[in-house]
Length: 130
Image (cartoon, rainbow, N blue to C red; front, side):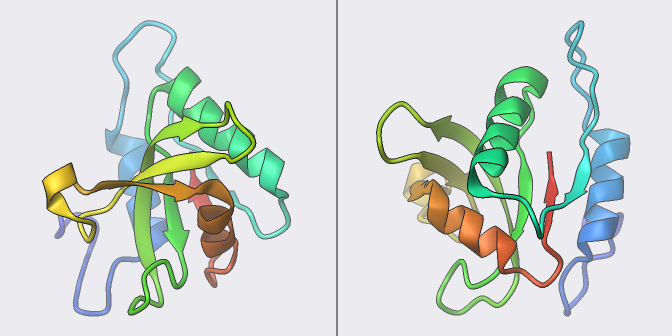
């Protein structure tokens, strides 16, 4: 797959990753064939972002893919995906799947959704795939 998305020592171009996922990440359940939407999110607000995350997970049944900035102390750019959202309480949380996270937990960790939103908005490309 790394060759198909042209990953090299400089990283992966999100445009190429998005095109690859739109072509190859299909849900075969009836009514769930909707493909990913690649969106510039520079001017969206937090609540729209939360709604798009929820819609992607629950209606499309696909994990949103985000480009994030300074998500980890040593990272300037990185891709993550979200597999669960919890907006029941006063603090909204998302569970991020990231191979850089502790693998004892399958690479999944809960984060404050506002932190993830800010990291996503602050990336130079301002994109989300959902």
